[in-house]
Length: 200
Image (cartoon, rainbow, N blue to C red):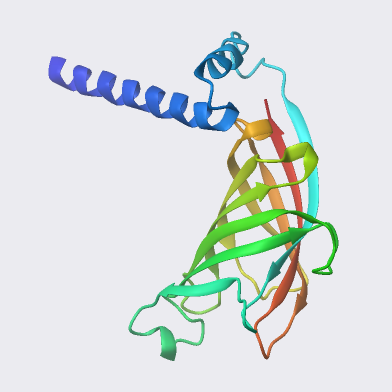
């Protein structure tokens, strides 16, 4: 029993070290600044002051042309014969812009991957890092993880915000996505995102 207790304590210690390392990378390369920030949360997080940020932008997903933003990283033996491309895994680095046009001001990049996980209908299991370059959020990130059925054009898809760095430390929240444009010949798409993030 004592051995199990030691193992549990070790696991908690490792989790705390991992959390501190994540916060260190998120806040600054200076450990003293990270410690000062963390000490500022001396009261329980449920009572700590939090901020809410609303973001709106467009993601440009390009499969065609000489500079695609999507590459196929893996696929299953059945992927090519599956009507839903089941088993495929794609890696993406998509620009995020203020408006729906690619020439609109850049606000950041979506660096992400997704796996096609639906046998009967197309569905993505997606993990996305939103990397912001705009002045207010430069260098900060939000992380999103969830299911996205991409061809339900008339509805918004909801995905949870599961973390963040920089100004979005300890973030949670919700992202909604809706297809703004889709070219069925090339696969190119523009997706509208609304993100609400609660952070400290």
